Image (cartoon, rainbow over all chains, first blue to last red):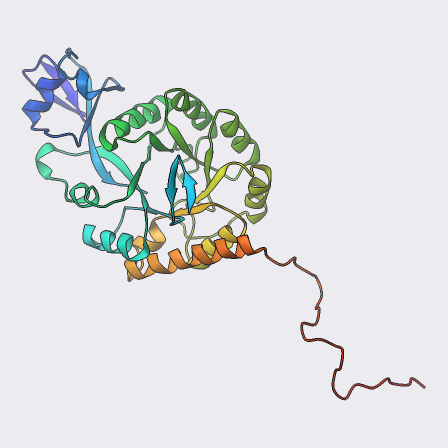
Length: 65
Length: 260
């Protein structure tokens, strides 16, 4: 299935947000996920299904002013 | 001690964490100047890259104020705020909505709307705003207890572009926590806004890009403390003409001159 991850199209064999983060190697609690410009709470990763062309944003802590 | 967002702090310097030579340089700036609050952001990053910055900061006993820097719409800002709450486990959000690319001036319309929505959602909103009085009034009406007006555009180091407007904000919002955010270039600028009665100063570039960032952080911390003490002690009123400070009574060699 083709989805957009952080602005880039990717082929990925995943059904949920939990699958996506696992496949991409995001671990621990220092990242956050949004699907189609809506934040997905951590306890909803397993329950949140993804569909073709969904836009997934995965963000991590960074320097900021 | 002063209160911010329900917590007690001693330091009135809020530090941005960008543009330092190294994470260690940033850590030294924080520890040497007694900084208790830092701003952070969320960015795209691949999972395998590691996160030295965050590994280092999370070990420190400091409060995190995440921002929504570079958000261009209400929805982007709201989603970023929700994501920041997930990661940083705080309801604090430094709400930024870019309205102009050249000055990075905030979009006040998006700012007020996003603030209203986020406050209803339980956030403590720190809106980055201009010095405009009516925008400030709308933000307060939306429920903001804290305002972060700019002194000058971000990263410009210009100091206070509109002192009268900043004084007006302080006078009109005595109950609101006012933190100067952006445009501060020198410790004297920070002292000046603190003397006006501002509650704190937030800055990044002037410290991060100094030859010696930890030393500059100390310089700012002292200037901010001095400015605050000056405000609390009560500044003398400004006068147009001189008023002798040494007593005139008993002036040596004085005699009444007879005019012919």
